[in-house]
Length: 244
Image 1 (cartoon, rainbow, N blue to C red):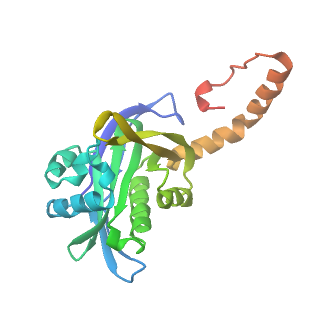
Image 2: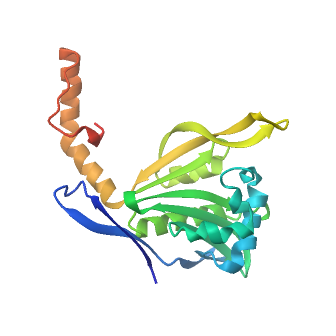
């Protein structure tokens, strides 16, 4: 059984036609072996997992409390979280024990997704579960038909940064993240995280970009050369949204 998210958008590879397209999130149910030699089942969250998943987030990422992600640390919030059919949560299941989880937020209108909150319980860190969940989340995102995926992590989260680089994400920059805690109980004084922003093009979007780069690359060189010669001259014979 699959979930279909339909929308109508213009496709850059055929801008004269509107296609009915959508994201089809695949069924995720696969066995993977961790570095500890234990077999884990990677699957979507079930109702009986709510307590275990909330404990993973509360214990491994306590900074989520009192932020916009606070609901992930409380089991009673999961029915509301999952009521949004664009949110998918994957878990690693070890005979009913949930030691790791990840969240995928789909955006069907833009054929995009965010990979968020890949978290492993402290006692299971070092087993490779973070890498396994990241891999399986990316596989599900790609198989859903997504054309763009982004990921965010804190500057101190070097493990996630390495995983993003392994999967050939582009590091966009560092920005101010969520407010994680107030200082000395004073709400006007707070600690704000610094967040690293990654992005990656997938499927037809990546192929389209490569073809545009190959065709329009000489125009970019010509633009730079003429710009040096003629000052503010800006050739407009090609669409500016191509980012060149």
